[in-house]
Length: 71
Image (tube, rainbow, N blue to C red):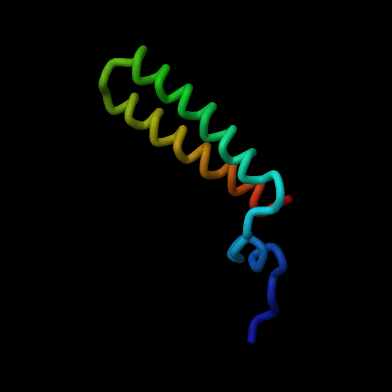
């Protein structure tokens, strides 16, 4: 059996929300949504616009994951 790596164990473990975390997740999502609407308003429909929205979604995911995994 391979030796367990604590970092891998932590990354791939369920992290139930701790006190105060849901509010942080909401704030990050709301700011990302605000930027998404700005992009929607100012940018022409294009592949680049779609990628900007997709990457903003990924940014939100990873920011919230950083809270869940590391707090």
